[in-house]
Image (cartoon, rainbow, N blue to C red; front, side, top):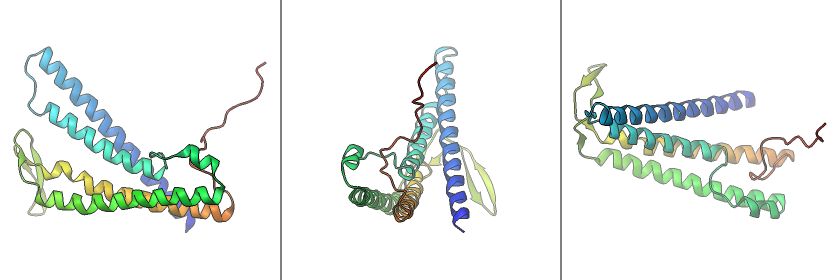
Length: 193
């Protein structure tokens, strides 16, 4: 059972990393296309800047969930290294709980924002679920589609925080817990020949 949970955790991390890569690639493609169309052909698309910005926003919010899970968020790692292991564990778990609460706020107010968001992007086409199929809708994509990442990211932040707390608790119980400030790679200290 434990191996299955670890496998799911790695799969989710790889999936979110892939989405970040896709959004980064989309951001670059949209920006380059927009620049070429503006300065070479003098006919920029009306949707170019908007898609670049939306790709950036979705990238940042998905990356937030990844940083929470990997404990790469802003932390006082230097202080952790000065504290006894058990006290450092408690401080780190406190901050992870604070981040979990941030995720809950993102879920609550993100859902409210999505439900109450008015307006449409006149330059954007979109698809809607209609009569059991995705129907193409020319122009006027609702703005709520763009901010739907806020509650989605909130759920991912909460799941990442819970997973980090559980993982750290198991490591502390097994005696293998170490502060998040430690480096994940090994340095070859062997002398050069």
